[in-house]
Length: 345
Image: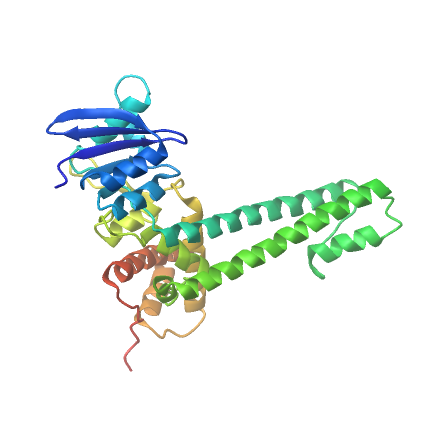
């Protein structure tokens, strides 16, 4: 049924479709998005491989709705396999060739719900960056004129308003107007971040999978959504076990193994999604600090305290984040609930 493989190279205006069957390329033609959508509906069920890009999740969803076996593959891997010069035809052919490699790992696609949650999260991250940049710029520019402001009393907005109302600081009318405009912009960014937080909190309540992830140690609204986006799609078995998911996020030691000798290094400095790993470790650090400062109630508390005594809080936080990802993977794939194991009297 799925012996025919179709490699699809997506672009903004055109879509290159390479059909491979019986060890031979049957066609490698160009289509418009409308023509490709019609082809998906009318074609018999086949295996379609999309190169992972901005619109690949949308087309993957449409292909699955039409009854096809749709998968995503790494663009970096395709670029290694591609022969000759980079053209749409060569890219589509390389996608088919890459999918035929033994033990090739496909990329997990996202559902519509995951895409929407990711959009809200990315908008919030951008607003937080702009807020920090705008705030630092205002503080630095005023400091150049020896006007020092602090956000300890009433916040940064109140401090800037005090500067604008001070008639003895020597600011011109035009400079005051510019600072006032920047202050209004900063205030709107702060409100935007609060609004995004409200949207995320409501989204967690609306999604049952996200809601049950909140029971994990060190997992709040943001990390529940992070885990749901990263691990919530298991339809094609991208990760065979939780250990693979944790390694993909960057929470396991780097291996330097050769000749049967296994060498484990430290946690890698660079990873594909540093924000995801950072937020998971920060949440785990809060849980570690709380566990250390109170009497142990669960077996995991005992494990955390023992690890802190041996390796310190930072190492314990990374280890807890690793365990959290693996537990979340089991919860999402098996549909189970998390319940901490209490200490017996």
